[in-house]
Image (tube, rainbow, N blue to C red; front, side):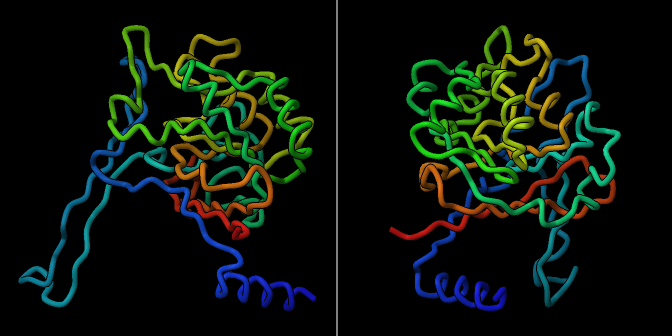
Length: 261
């Protein structure tokens, strides 16, 4: 039976009945990196150094050294990333059970609200309202929040930093608690540079998505794109991070399987 299901999936991919949508931003030197207050240690931006390119350094091959922080570009947040998730077993990128990287996607579209207010916060009432219009969010699923923020091509506009800090949308703590505790999701995904709103250092608790989601042994996906190509329900997300021993996260290639038409 399982073999038949896999064969059917492969046939659907080959025929175009199921299409693959890339939810990943290109990783390059210009990739925006989250900016923390200067009292905290910063994360390195992405860099690439050529080792050889079919030359005297290596006549038959081209390759590079790369360097970046774990949470650069489209990236995965593991529970160990936050102090509230540090004591769970199997909480780092190398030992999280791999089946937890794959799940159905529920896409909550708040692009209109964010266009009117860059500090928009999705709260529990907003999630429940979405469920009434579409479907109840099932356990072991990914909840992705479409804001169209990834369409901000200019890094300054994307980070949107003002004198009082960054202004980007995110979650109200009530939504995080609801999704983690009452819906038992795998995690959440956003188009912004991190899963918390830009002003989340001023919230109670600080950084509620990180604090509560990782404190519930759940995950985060940040800097996603192409969420406008996903239906509200019916897609599947595949999001395995690099297998870094004791890694708190990593850049990754996030793919969604979507029924065509």
